Structure formats: C-alpha cells, structure tokens
Image 1 (tube, rainbow, N blue to C red):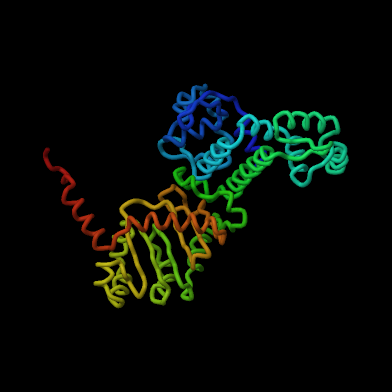
Image 2: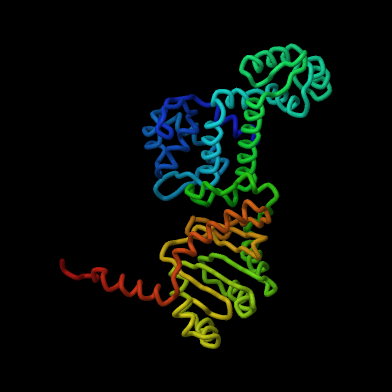
Length: 390
C-alpha cells in the first residue's frame, strides 16, 4: 500500500454526518471509524453500531487502517494506535484550514495534484503547462484547460494576463495534502514501531520520522533493539535522561559505568522495576558501595544520578543523549514481543522536543525509592486480606 493509496482510502469512503468538536460535519466512514476507536476499545460489531453501518461495511472500513498499523488489536477489541491518532489529528487540523471536499477531490485526482505542483514551482500559461505535461506524462491539454477553469472558479488559481498562479488558498490546499501524505507515509514506513503505541500519544510528530533510523528485531536476531540501547550508553555523555520498564542484566552492565561517571543521569522506572531490583544481589552490592542510604531517600545511586519511580506502566523505553539524540521503543506493556519489537533512532529536533516533553511529564510524577516502598506498604495495609470476612 502506497501513501497515496492509503490517503485516498481514508478519504474516499462513504460520508456520514457526525459531530466533531461540537459541530456537525460529514466525515468519511473510515475517518469516523478511527474517531470511534479513539474514544474506546470496540469489537467490530460494536464499532458498526457506533458509526451506524453494517458489520460488513465496518470490516471494509477497518481493513486499510489495520494493514497500515493505524489500528491495534487488544484483548477487548480494537483501538487506535499512535499513528492512527496522529493521522486523525492531522486530518482535523487540515480541515480547520481547508475545505474537506477539496481535499477529497485532490486525493482522487493525479491530474489536479500535478497542476497544483507545477504552478507551485512557477506561474505558467496553459500552453506551457501542456508542453511540460507531455514531457512529464502529465494531463492532456484538454484536461489542463478544464481543471484550471475549475481551480479559478474555486479561487485556488488566479489568472494574470494569461498566466496562472496559485492563490494563497491554493497553496494551503496543496500544502495540506502534502503534509497529510507525509504523515501517512511515515505511519506506513515506521509501522513496526508506531503500531504498538497507544492512540493517546497522538501528539507524536510522525511526519518528522523521515530521517530517523528504524531498528527491528527478527526471529533470527531478537536482541537488535536491546543492543541498540546498550550502545547508546556512553560515559562521555554530559546528560542522559530516559525511561525503562524492564530489569535487564545487559542494560545494567551497559549503564553502570554511565551511573558512575560524571554524566548527569535522570531516569524514570515503573515501581515493579524497583521491587525486582531489590531482589538482585549484584544491584544491592552496587548501591551499598555508592551510597545505599542516599539512593533510598533521594533516588541517587551515584554521582549526579537521579532514579525515580512511578506506579503506572510506561508505554516507552526512552533514551535522550545530550539533548541531541533520541532512541525510543515500545515497552512490553503495549503488547509488543521480543520478535516484533522495533526502535527509532533520531536526531530530528521535533522528535527530541516531543521525547523531552514525554520524559518531563513522567519525571514530574516520579518519586524516590523510599516513597515508592511506603506507598506499596500503605496499599498492602489497606487492601482486604484474602479470605477475610466482610
């Protein structure tokens, strides 16, 4: 499936009335299906009832989204993935700026896109466009005349002394289509990574992944992702911030020198990692050597190392190195397995900015180990004992 095919399949489906942001709008069925799955996890039958279509139509509406990784399968049914949420967010942002029907028509017509792209490069006369089209395999002269006429009528193109150029409205229409296609292209290209992440991470800048490297596990090489994260450990780093949801001897061996170095380390883990660490004799010996008391009270295991813990599960493994490089991978809580895991390695400023905000949101919830132990003890004291009478 190409980005153009997926874009058209999302838009070129039966339109139905729906309430979007408090307003009534006509949305394609596949967009409405994504909307419904953003609200809650649904079976196909319940989804069909939700969007008022037959079950057969619901299956057809879901097919391209599932193939593209926009929809993820959970125990309770289907839900939106991170890329599905990003595509849906991009669609609504676009439709706040341009006419929905114009976007659909542009998605349907290679000729319309060719003409807008040609005029974006430079204003031109119809005859000039026709000559260029013959050389590039573009639309015929008759088609150019017809489409130019409709574009002028819709105010996407303006004529000046026989020369045609894009209006600001025309530029916004083409930019909207191009940007939407870029998001969809990366959703497809990086689906091995994005399809595991929940839809509430829809702010993730999917279109910024174009220059990012994807690292995939495979049946023959199930540790590629883990190895990539261990290679990120470098005692020459000035700063390291990250989240992790697993206890791994391999990761511990890789990052122990970083914790002992002058690198300013700040890391957030779920509580269950803390409790597993404290059954690890090697870890206990390590924190004893570097100051077990300060670690327990403040989450400091060594010089300039802050370790915090949160009661919730984390959807991402994350490493931010010197605020200039980011690595991300879905955590086991998303349902990903060792064989299906994939990671992103990026230096794009937009990805770094998003990852930093993600880290800071969890860092704000983090607390030192002693607080996590006290919270656990309090929970166990207030929980009903097994077998106790009411």
